[in-house]
Length: 164
Image (cartoon, rainbow, N blue to C red; front, side, top):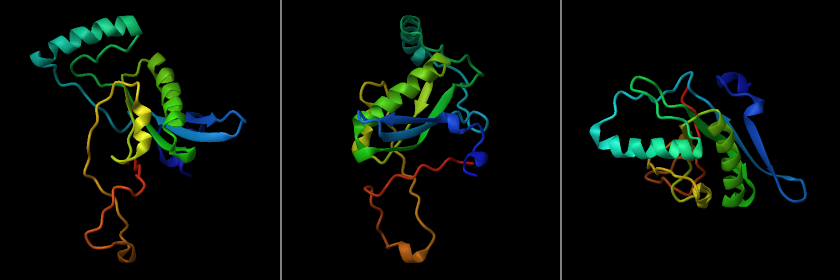
């Protein structure tokens, strides 16, 4: 049922990490949400000219997807449904690298992955060029028995909620 409610996500989009003993120690899914979520380029301003030239050079050297033309969309995918044993950043980093390399070959420009700001798992982004964004979106239960007044703890588990 979960997969049927998410357009473009299938069981084949899940990745597993195994430890040296062959036991699973991590999982994540990579989801192309372009059927309902897009980042469209309206125009590139003059302040981005240097960055665009540099990116074009890097895209040739590292076989990166070209930047979209004005009016086109970035090809994004979202890493979701993730969990790793002991919240080990090395395991998550291995999953992210595997997924990123697969989607890079498919000419995607952006990988989107997120967690709570104080989550040690965010160290898994080491080795990637990334832009850290801070969101003040907080999801809480609507059951009054579970809500304490004025109490929002960042250490609570991050909730990844696809916006459908």
